Each structure stands twice: as structure tokens, then as C-alpha cells.
Length: 180
Image (cartoon, rainbow, N blue to C red):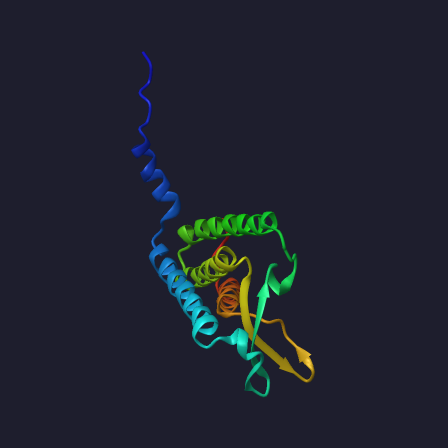
């Protein structure tokens, strides 16, 4: 006698078990807020403040606003000028977000959940830029003693804060958040 085949709906609880953990709502909430804040600020800078027409705007002796379209990844590496290159970067980003989400589903630390949410939200914010404009909108320039830091945005700051939180977590406890 043939065994009955599992229905597609039977696979849903298994998928939910893989994708959802006790702290997933915290991480997902942080990701949504980080992404929305990033996108709202970029929208305001581009279409209300019109940063493209203003050029460099001095905020402080060491901090300027300046519009830069980053068609690469972090620090302008791997610049892509073709649609194929942009789609490859988006694909890599999608895989990274999926892996980070898997980590989020398994974490038991609130700090790790918030940190992973920041990284995921920042990655999604920059992915939206790449889909919408073909490049990431960067606008914050930190400079001191003649050294210009890379131009970055709120999504990048969220990613750095998230990585910092994960590093702190790994040094702070014996039961630190472990990657899957």
C-alpha cells in the first residue's frame, strides 16, 4: 500500500519552526523600524530637502551631508554599473538576510535579536534603494584632520550598530548568540 503524500499545508508548521523563534517578533520589529526610518530619511533628503541640488551641506566642523550614489557594497567596493551586477548584489543580500533570519529564529538573547534586527533592517533598506534607484543612497560624510570617512547612511549605521551588539554579546556571556 502506498504511503500518503504530505499536503503542502503540512509543510507550513515545519517552515514556521525554522523561521520563527521566541524572539523573532522583537528582531522583526526592530528590522521594520530600522528599514522604515532609513527609507523615510532618504525620501526626505532626496525629494523634500533636495540634497542633490544643494551639494555639500555642513552640519558640524566634522560632519557634512553630501549625496553619493553607491552602486557597490560596503565602502564602495565591487561597483556595479550593469543590471546583471546589481541583481547579483541583490541576490547575495537576499541570501545574507535569509541566513540572518535563521539565526534570529534560533537566538535566545534579546540583545542578539535586536542586533540581528538592526542588520536585517539596514540590509533591507539598502536593498530597497538598489531596487528603486539602481544604487544605494549615501549622504553622511564624517571627516577629521583632513581624513574623509566613507559616505554612509542610516541603514549602514544600523548594520554597524547591529554588528557591534553581536560582538558585545559574544564577549559578554558564556551563552552568547551563536550563528547557526
